[in-house]
Structure formats: C-alpha cells, structure tokens
Length: 137
Image (cartoon, rainbow, N blue to C red; front, side):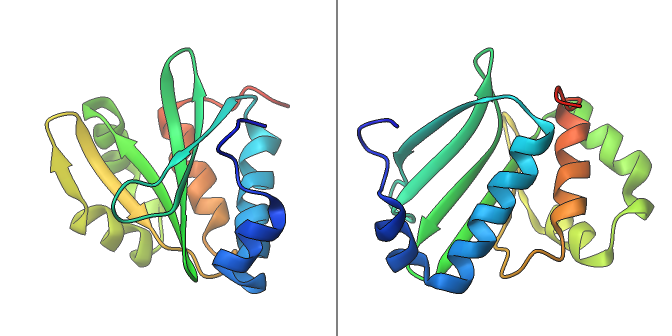
C-alpha cells in the first residue's frame, strides 16, 4: 500500500461502518471488471482521502472519503459525453440528474456521486464502460 493509504480501521472510523461497507463494495465492483493501478492521495480541501483507479496515465474514476461521506467521481470527456447522451434513457433519472447538474470544465464533465448504498453500482459500472471497456472477464 502507498505510504499515505489509511489503515482499514482509520477509513472505517472516518466513514462509519455502513459507508465503509459501501466503499468496499464499490471497490470490489470496480476491481471485478478492471485491472487498474490504485493510488491513494490527499482529498484536497473538500475530502480527507482520494483513491484513484488509473491505467496508462489515464484515470478511470476516483473515490473520495470524508467524515460520514463517500464521493465517486467520473470525468467524461467529449467522446464519453456523446456516448452518454446517446444512451441516457438507459440510465435511471437519478443518474441523468447527476449528469445534468455536473459542472463541465475545459477537460470534461466532472460527475460526483455520493453513494449511500449499493443501489446505483450497476449504473456506475455502465458509466465506467463508456470511458473504458472492462479488461477483466
């Protein structure tokens, strides 16, 4: 583990047990489909920790942790936005709302989810597939 990675107990204390379970389930869901480099970092001003999934210098997604809160960030460039727009009806209204309300910067649309349970995980994995095909069978 990288030197700035929190111990499991520390992360669980920060998130609380229910969200810690959600965090682990989300990591499992991503790692079941993707073989990626995983990098811990500081969460900047808004978060305590950042946990990125990267490969070949490109970030697939990032998870963020702060007290009693998880963030799940997906950044869509132009090509991914076009793919999402073409298939948006396949996603539940909640996902479409997050997408519509996300800020678009020069480098893409930054969609930050704050999952409280596992109900949207299949949709999250489908969003990631717009960025990169899963590389695990």
